[in-house]
Picture 1 (cartoon, rainbow over the protein chains, first blue to last red):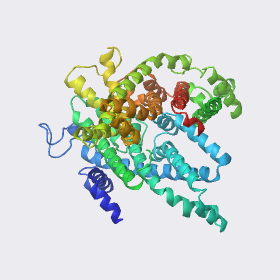
Picture 2 (picture 1 turned 45 degrees about the vertical axis):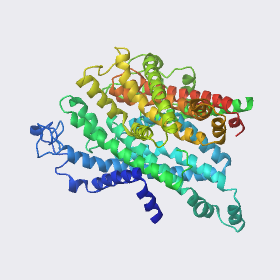
Picture 3 (picture 1 turned 30 degrees about the horizontal axis):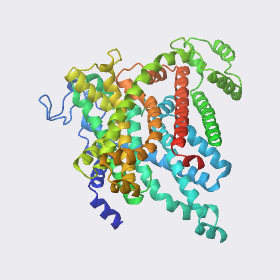
Length: 282
Length: 306
């Protein structure tokens, strides 16, 4: 743990990434405590205010109000919650499914491997955005479905990675020795093989998380994300488009939040890769 | 080589077959297609008759085979919205998307390759730092936000370019192509940089330098040629993903291609068109991958043996 922290302190970009991610996490956890207003409270008398630092801004709404008079700062804070929730849950779903299937394919080989790898091939044929959109349109928009889509679109990279690593480890002598001792398959996989691949899995998970943040925002932007009653950055941006000439800040702010979050996660992921697994090809 | 070709061809065919199964299954999760086609006042009996006529009461495997037969000849049924064969509706929009994707790939190559080479050759310099930051940003900017920001800057404030559509030639093409191509440019740049750095550290580069060859010759003829072969695979994938990734860019810029069509068709539950687009894009992806793999195996014969 100390070595990890020392390496992070030496990496400027890693520290920037960590700082950004920490800010997003704190905003997400304490969103309702930090938010000055109710993010759903409409106030049509005070709609489309610019942020406080502009000539037309008011101190009441630090980042202004949207087309229904809702407080932008409060909506951005609650939006961070959704972004983080989808990113974490989606990464866990994709990671668990990918690692389990990758283990099965790599360890047992044969038809299990053939079928799973063909599934991987098929999935890789679908353009990412289109697949997400297609499933979202069919399943309908709900928080659970968006998480499911994040999982479905991201399991492939874990599966390929874990399978490859297992193929190279499973014939090694120490695994043979454990097998000769009568070690069960489950014990070999969970106690001896998985710890060897876990660092690569963590690196992939971080980089996939950044992609999931972008995917969730894209789906929300296109109107197929979580339900309208939940504020998300993507939807805020989409709703603000109509007023981009008169109220450009409404467009600028949510986009900035998305970009910074993705940047933070990516910077952290790049550092983690350099630290844990420099040879990993991602 | 023949054996390798046959194996890759078989894999591609299996993938295409798999795609038809996935598209068929997902579409059957959408519910009763007859309900989408009729008006709310249609009686239950009339709907039953229609369902029987259109074969929706048949066993699923039979329905799948019918779907497969149609897909092979490009028959995906009739678009409820346009009242024309879905394939024709889609084909009318293909040229616009192709134009956008080709322009985006050109921008990605023109920006990404020189930046990647420069960044590797001038490693740890100021220009390397700037390029790396820009490349990272290029991978983090959501396309829809970048598009809106460009419209705000160049159309609304400066008035130089049109806000959307494709009626003004290159003036309407440049912003969507840049928006779509930036992510690929960043990806190409980052991959090429790391490949070039690896190649530049090899002994044969030292030998070339020791022979007294000029720096530019060493970089371009010896290092770049080797580093580029691995980029080739990615270029194929990038082009395919540009075709699919155009959904968002086309929506932002009101570009009349298949990306925008797919969104409109999903909104109007016109699933014949959706299924046609998803299937076509997936097949194009498989074909591009196949061609790239074959090309790659010609450049690098070791691949065939793996």
